[in-house]
Length: 249
Image 1: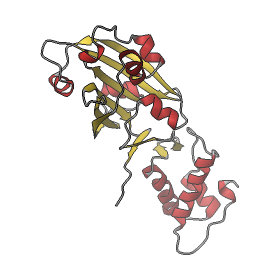
Image 2 (image 1 turned 90 degrees about the vertical axis):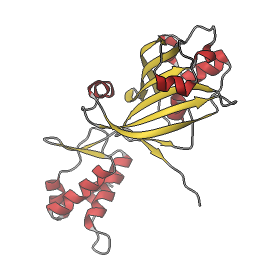
Image 3 (image 1 turned 30 degrees about the horizontal axis):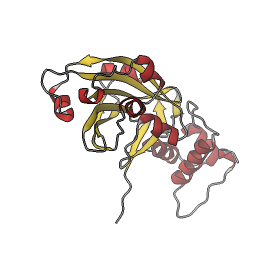
Image 4 (image 1 turned 60 degrees about the horizontal axis):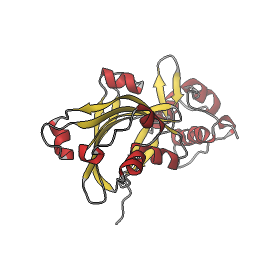
């Protein structure tokens, strides 16, 4: 049944809430796809006979949920669904995306041995004077950029091995490469998540407007013995990604 074929019911449930539910269900069913415009306030007024305030409230609700973006001259545009990451689950990007039925891919921007900052040295226990392998990549889901990642691999993990090149990094998971080539499996770690406004460079990489909201995760990953393996800073598009916390009493 199309969204405009439903009759609103008078009663305890507010009309704006009913309209928001109808439009949300239409987005979920594919009646409105990412990039499509939802009915305008004027059209909702015409179909349901509600006030402009009621129509606006229903669209405001969907915007608060991140389902649409209100754009001047275009209306209420349906957004790509957000990817949800449980906070208590440590997984590589490839594994995470495949578990959600999405196709992961990477675009390596740079990869080289560099002198790490003090923060990176502390996180990876890198002695002064030693370099770490720095990798800067775009992370994509179904071909669309979802995050940018800058990570450093502890030099002791690589040893005398040749680090992964761009072809290795573009074609698969870094965690998979570490397990396959170094015998190192990521078994734990800790992560700090902060909100941050995108600067010009980050905004260009993520294909968003400067000063847009992002989620920045600073992660230290460790092996089964607790030895640090990787330190990463991952900047996610806030409109494409969110974290979930499962609580128990």
